[in-house]
Length: 365
Figure 1 (cartoon, one colour):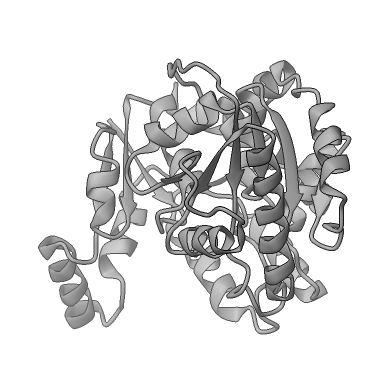
Figure 2 (cartoon, one colour):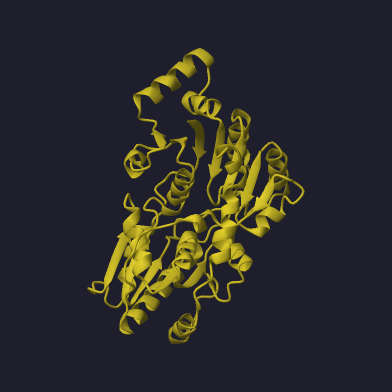
């Protein structure tokens, strides 16, 4: 079997974990390998063609020590994995964001990833935000060494239109297929994020209080209208569960029996059932919008990052909210949500297959 190394954000985020699953399921005759913490051995235990190596593994620790003693280098096991794989797939969404003025460390990691890989491909990413032209210039030079780069929005691809290996296709999650059958009920699914700890160059912490108050007010209004409310956490590490607790404290009846919570940890199926059974999705997490679309729901996106706005603009989404535009009359807003038409995703699903065009040529041959 061909061996392929996956470089991804492995921190218990539903969206990123779903990308990894889609990749592995597409190529069942390929042996994928990833370095992640030990919880991923359980989280991905059902993916037969994926091997998870964690820093706690005795073999990994021993390899790192030997590399340090003999070759005076760190991360010896990681480097060996790159060298012995026929390709590296860097899969993720916001993987090229300039978080600091000095972007040296992040860039050097990507540079080393490229230098030590036999072939390297980027799947499903967006580029930026960034504000330093040197950042863009540095990555333009680095990307010349890549065999294939497929962004998920036209804006990102347009930044590198001079590079023949750069393309654009709809998000990887449009390739997701599920056999889950669950009757739709009168339920609104809220995907939320915690903003109070999102500071720095692209910080949105200043919107935290207003955002949570808005979600609480909208959830209260739907309860009053007879809907069940379900909150979904995509990532415990990034504070989604804490955000849900904060929002419920702001609600008029936080302990109502018609309010439930679904928290992604290891059970992806329960999360997918939450989307399937809901009538409306109020989506802040990027992939909550995509999942709502492909499951034929009425989706109200709340834009907290340019990655979402670029995708919405690509698909001519007629109505969404931004963090600086949450001052709505709730009744009027609910009327607009009632008029939302589920997105026709047939073409998007077909075009999203293009995310894997270069990989298909080497992994399906």
